[in-house]
Amino acid sequence: MFFAISTIAIAGGIGTVITPNVVYAALFLLLSLLAVAGIYILIFSPFLALVQILIYGGAVIVVVLFALMLTRQSGEAGNLDSRQKPIAFVAGSGMLAVLIATVLKNSWPDPVDRQVVGLTELGSELFTRWAVPFELASLLLLVALIGAIVLARPSDKRPGDNS
Image 1 (tube, rainbow, N blue to C red):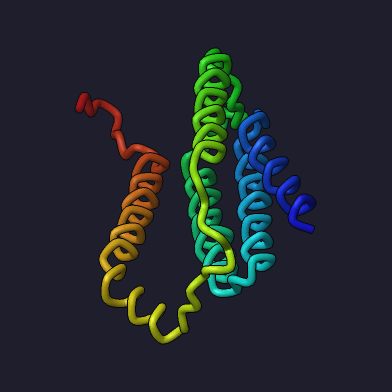
Image 2 (image 1 turned 180 degrees about the vertical axis):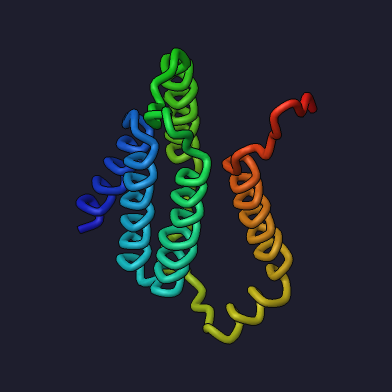
């Protein structure tokens, strides 16, 4: 089951990168994020799976699609093809090599030595120590959405106005 869900996550990531359509790229990203939530379920972390679905699968993808709809110009086809694809492929391959080397060279702890954390401790930690980073992330998404609205808004130029 892990390999099937991992294959779906990888396929969604590859689809995100190689598709020329912006909307399809966002939907492939959603597929990949939902597959990661499936992996969290497989490792018995239902809270992380729920957070993955609600925050990333829901909120972030909705903001991305909303920003795409707002910033799309009438004559624009939404094509992502670029001359920088070979450079991106080399950079991505280099990052993959670093990730594989990191996984192979590190000694990982025994999975039997896991600590069980209750939801009370987790909630307390989230709302005390990690409250500010969550609020900053939501503020960043709000600023990005407002920026998309400002960029998509038609200009209010009047005839004879040179400014």
